[in-house]
Length: 445
Ligand code: NAD
Image 1 (cartoon, rainbow, N blue to C red):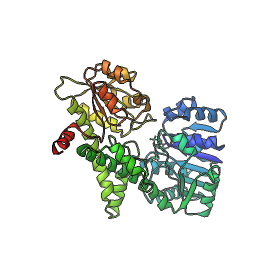
Image 2 (tube, helix red, strand yellow):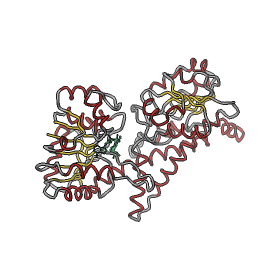
Image 3 (cartoon, protein in one colour):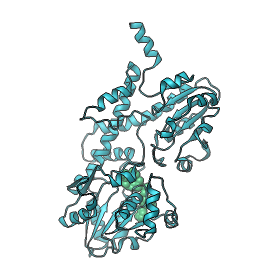
Image 4 (cartoon, rainbow, N blue to C red):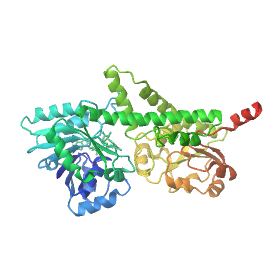
């Protein structure tokens, strides 16, 4: 099939490459000339495991091309996929539709023959109707249907998730459009669940899913706080909970709060939509405010650890919002760094993939190290903020030798607490019993 993709970011690019790999003819359109020039020159513009190889393979085979021309991407396409950003509105925090509206208006005049316009961006319920109206207004003779095709890929696993989706949700209001999308996803038939629903249901499924996952993370973080006070161990508690098939083990890792380009903005957008429709969503609102507080609490925890040390040097391992990506948008690590900087902290950081993206956001306000040992050298505290696998292999004896004070705040529970203590570290993970409470328990006994 011939497919035009509007927006060549974290969703558009892996989707385009994946669809090309399945044998389709793909043209990716982006309004950023620099991005397109790089891609045309064979330079990948973002990090996702396995993407670069597939990108080169399909570009070489001529199955995927890149352009800034909307005309080129849209004319002759059987399906036009909209994958532009829907960031939070700076004031209301609702999903800002300016890029969606612009894309719909820009693409309208180039539609030729029957075309399915599929919205992959995460968009508020009713957006399909708006996109339909915008296209019809600009091009009254266009023969098209608008479908909702929400994206569920996880950043860091985008290529894997493209080829092994948990489910494919399609919100289509006409049989004709449903058949076109069925043909697109033919290679997945029998391998995954395909759910055809009303367009408005599909738009809602995406927000309902992301908000639910954010609430799950917030819940386990609150439970971790409870464990710290009571002497229970959150890892054991989460394991015990996760064995219940109604709960499941995923998204029960306590940490510094959720982040990334989706959960924070999608929870706020869902909350806004609920308010607009006079529906009270107390759980989502609690997760939003609790998550903001969480990152402040982690910054306080780090500052408390170096209290009394003159001009402490804080080593940060991890800047990306999670492992497997270079994306720092709404990263808890970055929020914590900003918070520490407000307290005049002296910070040096290392991240295996996100140094470039972090530097674009924060510049020279912090120092950047070439590897984790250079990062912790002469540091007074080490804070682990992203769950990169390589941090698990930190040589604790070497770390103890390199650091000025032996203090670790492990916001991802990556290190072995006992080993850290055995190497002379004062170690604090998340959701594990504190010394103070232990004493209290002993007193009672
Ligand atoms: P992104 O910012 O990485 O990419 C969006 C791209 O669209 C940018 O390159 C931008 O230049 C381009 N663009 C904007 N307007 C355009 C126009 N009129 N014509 C051509 N190009 C245009 O965003 P993203 O992370 O890929 O997210 C895209 C959408 O997918 C969002 O709605 C997001 O919520 C949703 N989503 C993202 C993820 C994720 O993991 N990032 C997962 C699921 C859903």
